[in-house]
Image 1 (tube, rainbow, N blue to C red):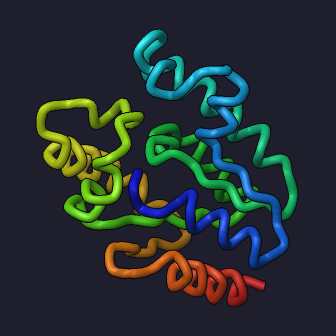
Image 2: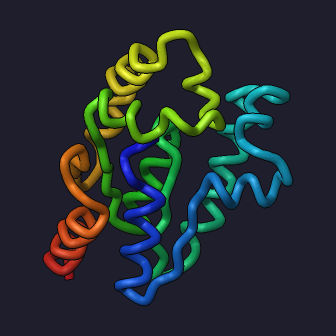
Length: 160
């Protein structure tokens, strides 16, 4: 969260003439409720189950840019699916920058805690082995959306 997945993904899709799918937005649309409400009512396990189903659906689409939530990698099947059907790029940022970017958004169920920066640090540490499985990792801490899009475009051009 807060690494620029949705903003970068949307801009990248526009520049490439591709469709853009924000997995979290798709889930909210299908469920007809916000993710924070899904977590509150049904819990994280239920969310991960519908997230996996939504990822399978969008992975079948051709020429799409998909922004996935940061926890999608917790399921090995999801990682395998992303790598098999496309290029898995992990955007990351420093915990301080993530907190700065998301602090105004109260719809982050995993950060509705007393010490959100500590929670971010814990999540990043816990998820690091999963994120490391990406085809490419890009630090977005000090870069604009346009700069990150350019980096990804170069990666994609080299894969042709």
